[in-house]
Length: 134
Image 1: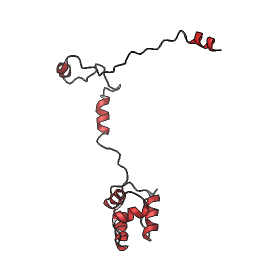
Image 2: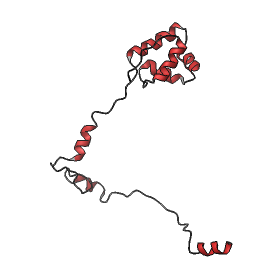
Image 3: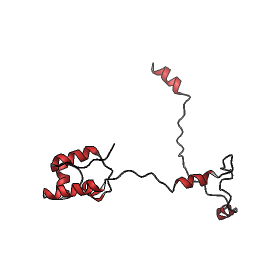
Image 4: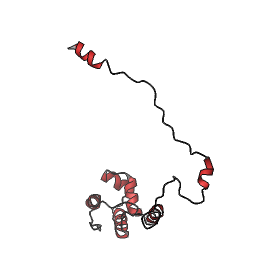
């Protein structure tokens, strides 16, 4: 059984040469970019109507998608309920077993609302908080 395996493996050779990957340097340096406003790369990126696709993609960049953040009502409600209980942000975070930064983000309006976490805050503070719509 051992001999048959050795015969089958005799044609396989291991290549131990190191592989080095490098970025290609642009040919011509700065002279290649000075071709009078023509797109770099040599191929035209235009639609059938003659509109440059790169310009269309650039137009979409001016309206980035924004994720919903905590509402003003929720921010104020969490802060008021926490202060009514005499707790600091750090105390509330420790009680909820979450980082203090999370409570800071909720009260600053930078957090993305999570209804499960809001429910957990409600239970610990003993009050009803405004929720975001699904």
